[in-house]
Length: 187
Image (cartoon, rainbow, N blue to C red):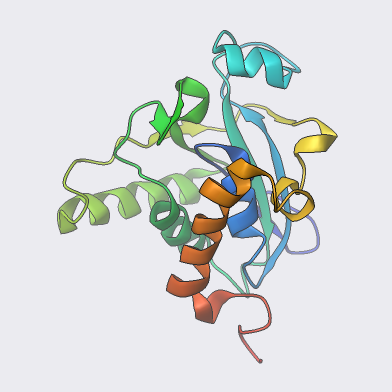
């Protein structure tokens, strides 16, 4: 896995990147979360192009994390808990391939862990439908425009943030309380 200073990187898409970014920023061991685009054919896409569906990119986040504090599988557990991996090319009212559930793996270990997580979820049968999360190797990641970074932190009163992002953050705080910043290992 790639990273500096012992950090590793996960690249995940589960609907609007504002939601996923806000969730992962809460977790102990996560050093940085960058909203961006991956999985499309056009280099250096813009938000407007991605939203048109013409580029094939998904809205994703890159999570830079310390595996000594939080593991990749822990990140996947959170990822699958805060979005609906059974919806194809949508999350709630956000519709289009840019909102697909996708894991862009960085190496074969991440690929195997993601496959195992999906098998486990499907075997449990608790979602009522099979997981449709796409698995693909990361070929390129393009950071989103600056105004998308830390969107929820900077715009908590924005209606979409109140209606969609805040409930996902709340769910994370409830389900993964032991993994939150300030509550983790050694605290």
